[in-house]
Amino acid sequence: MLTTLVSSNSSPAEQLHTEDATAAELQYEALVDLLFHRRKFKVQDKNMADTTDLTGDGGVLKTVIRKAKADAASPSESLPLVDVHYEGTLAENGEVFDTTHEDNSVFSFEVGEGTVIKAWDITIRTMKVGEVAKITCKPEYAYGAAGSPPEIPPGATLVFEVELVACKPRKGSRLESVSEEKARLEELKKQREVAAAAKEEGKRKREEAKAAAAARVQAKLEAKKGKGKKAK
Image 1 (cartoon, rainbow, N blue to C red):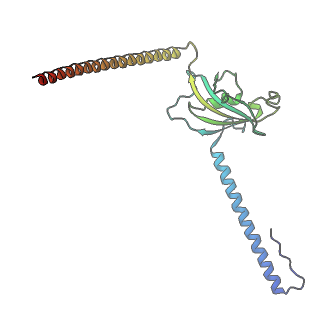
Image 2: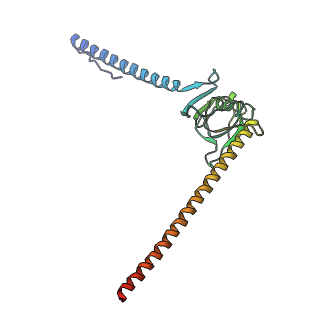
């Protein structure tokens, strides 16, 4: 805040003018401060609107980074096996402790079987194939008070960026059999299309060869006729 020094020799009128100026400065600073806080709260409200509290206690927060297509599949009883890409970081300092992006691999697991941390089981159920989301999870939904040393310290809040790559049926399920049969038929269809295209290509080449041979014969005949006319 700007400060105005008032001399003890100032007249009452000068002092009144100085007090008015100081009051105006205070009002201006208060207005700037109010506008700043309003803008700050609007940004926070927008970010909160994009984030979903999946557990109701702030333990698992999901922010959608990229939406999936409306008709994309999502994990279900018939499609419980999922493939995901992910990167995990420590919320405290942003340090990456695990990722599938380095070797472009996918991590596969079955939703609801307790083979992953609670935050993943909760969040992946809400996603669709093609969706990318940020998951922020408190320790009670991750590795708890003990952590998972040395990568994850005790009581760590974690942040994951996860892409749901695929949803699949269980091994040996009827749906898997149907899917395999569908895939087999699709493969047969592709093979037939390739064979038909090869057949057409062979036919085209044979016709081109015949046309070229006929053109050569015609050229020879024309050449002979030309020689005969010259001899006469």
